[in-house]
Image (cartoon, helix red, strand yellow):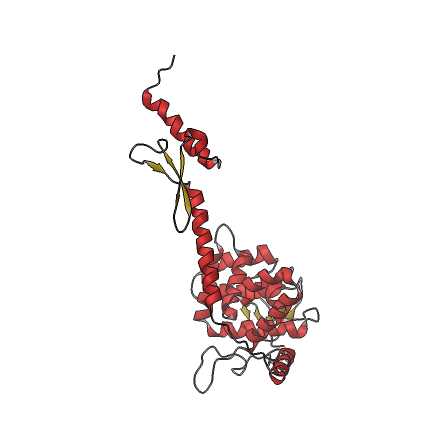
Length: 330
């Protein structure tokens, strides 16, 4: 048995009036009392006697109908404003201007030819500081960005990858820190931590910047399979291993040997190349293919050298003498 009070009986009647309006039924279908009030802007249907709780004598049209009416009025105002706007005169370019624009588009040449860049990376090719007499230049970075843009146009599927690794960065150092950090990151050390280490090494050792550019040019010059600078930067694991070693070497010289060993281990795991953090590597070095290369602690590799896969510069096994080989300049 269920007892209902007077208020509970009246509530369904009120809900019925609103539900009838929501279903676009005429209010007269509920209580038969329908009035229309006409104004200068719109006609509103008003109910009397049934509707909201006490205190509201009239029930106006549902809220969604009011929104539709306001939207229509706003559209009319916008159309009126557009009709009242003054006409705009558009001047077409002349034939000479069109010809000049087409010539500029056809002359989309790289900023510099690769063959014209000196492999020794002198100040005329790269300068980290700028002054009134000598503005900052970076021909290697300029050419890499240009070639990355051309590759993105030819292969749209790589657009996002090329943008995040090269085109989104302001300098070659920033791009390398981002790319290497993503290559060797692990649960033990996330990418942002490795990225900050690489930037620290760049800031502390100015020679690192020149050596990196010389390494890129060395691979581009000596490897016939390499057709552009982004290929070296993005895909050659020998280049990635060598640049990570330069960061580990900086940490070793700074007394942070445990951290340098961690980077050495990551290089060995990801690239199958084992270079001791204390090994001395010159500039303009190419580690071709790279798999299986082992370079010991006291080994020295001079400038402009090329090392192929499965080369070991290991210890002699003797005591009291220098254990590892020394390779001169190429």
